[in-house]
Each structure stands twice: as C-alpha cells, then as structure tokens.
Amino acid sequence: MIAVPEDGEKTILLASNANQEWDGPSLDSLRNVVNDAASEAVLTIDFEVSREAVEVALNAAGERQLRVIADGSFGQEVRP
Picture 1: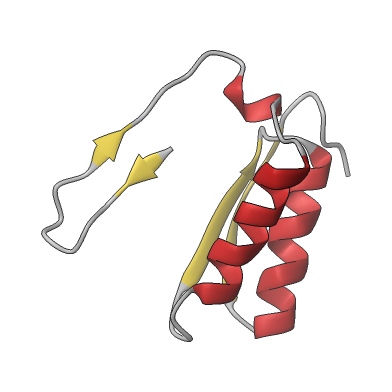
Picture 2: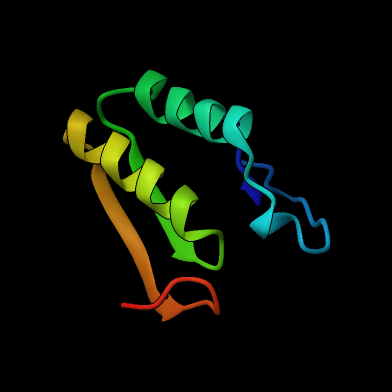
C-alpha cells in the first residue's frame, strides 16, 4: 500500500501475504473507504489482492461513478 497524504510525502507499507487476507470486516472497511471518498477521487487498483476485494472496490467505485485506474497485469488469484 502506498499512502500519500496532502503534504505529498508518500509512505510505502509492506506486509507479507497481506494482500490475500480480506475477511468480512476488512471488505466492509474497503467498501466504506471508497464510499466515503471525495467525488473527485480516483480508485487505483491492481489485481494482486483477492478477487473479492477487487470486486468490492470496483463495485463501490462504480456505484459512486468514480474514475478507476487499474493495473492490467493479473495476480495469481484474479484472472480475466
């Protein structure tokens, strides 16, 4: 995860195998973050997280009509 606050000082957070650990409360949090994002927000996503997390994020962004930028390479869990 890359966090970029308003001051522009990015922080990269790493946790081994964390991309696949999406339980119900985590998916709810993901949905809430997208739902609470500013109307001009852009969802950037890659496919190295669980299929369910990708679907939750994309569905929430679609409902809000947010712009989405997706990394076209696919991880092991999400295939076209």
